[in-house]
Each structure stands twice: as structure tokens, then as C-alpha cells.
Length: 266
Picture (cartoon, rainbow, N blue to C red):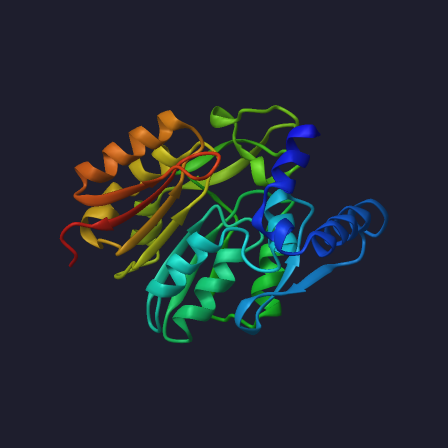
């Protein structure tokens, strides 16, 4: 509790508007304790809207009055354009999915992947609320094999993960379908992939292993990998460098974020 309070008090948004920050925090907590049956829908960037879930990722969107992470979001906004193709692996409620869908327009397409049944309905709703007909939602987990695998949901769905990578054991494990980036690209006959966001709570290396052929052949121009330990970050960075990507390590977050671009784009 003290640690969370300390982090809150050091955030820039708190010092910009202390009263507003505290009041929004009270509204957020009160809603999920007393009015959780009522949808919590907020205005998002560019005229978009988001239906939020009771998760830390969602609270970041509400408390920041915008992106949960403005640096990463603006990275994609600066890169994506009409007609492009993007993957959102570990889509959660669809914060990046709707951002991608809006950016690539009707001529582009977005493929979102989210196995957690607690937040999957929010992802579907957010695609529908924003009338994004260019988005395909897949209720599967990305991994290094295609089939099915044990998945451990958490009370805070932001931390849910494939069981072999789970740091917590709050939820009862369930079986979920899995696929790989390579298998999905082949089956969906995807011929272009411009951007890829991966946030999979420990499965980052497995997802990259399952997409190595795609990274070599389609050469997406921008990758963001939110690593969930320093060891994962080192392994993922090494793998991307071996695939001839230039990797930037951002250590300003709780865990490292990797931003990668092909050294030799197609």
C-alpha cells in the first residue's frame, strides 16, 4: 500500500493537478466497489472511446486521461499510416488495438490476440464501440507452439499469463488455444506486417520464437516488446539482434521495454 501510494505521489500527472488526480483515483475505486455492473466508458484520443475493465492497465488510461503509456503509444502513432497491417499480441481491453485500427484506416487491418476470458469481452466491445471493421479479434494466446496450453488468470487481468510463465497463482488455471505468429500469418495469408506489439507477461521470448520466420520474411518496421524480467529482456534482445534488428532498450519502466526496427528493411 505504501509503495503504491509513493509511486502515485511521484507521478507527473499528480503534480500537474493534485486535486484532480486524487478525485479521479477516488472515482475509479468507488466505481469498481459500488457500481461495477455499470460500464465505465471514457473518451480516448482522436475521438475514440474505451470501455475500461477493473485492471491496472485500465486505471492507467483513466488516471492519465489518455494513454496508459504515452511514449509507446506515440511511437506507434508516429509510425502507422493508412493501409498498414499491425498485430496486437496481448491486447487486453484493446487500448492499442483501437489506436492501431484508427491509424491504419479502412485500407489497413489489425489482428488482436487475447486469451483471458475476463477481458476478451471488453476487447470485442471496444472494437464495436469504435466501429472498427478493419480489426480481427482472436481469443487465443500467442506462444511458440500451436495447440492448447494451461493459462492462469489473475484478479488483475493485466498480470494473467500462460501458466508456465506465471509469477502468481491467484486464479485457477484453464486451458486456452494457442498459436504462433508464423502459423497465424500462414493460415490468414498475411503478406504484409508493419508493426507488432507484444505484452504477454513472461511469454515474450516464446512469442518471438514462434514468429522468427515472419520477422525474417515480412520484416515489420516497428516492434515493441514489453519484457517482464531483465533476463527475458536480454534473451529477447539477443534474438532480435540475430534476426538483424536494431534494438533500443528502455529501462525507465518497472521492466525493460524493447523497441526494434529492421537493420535492413524490405
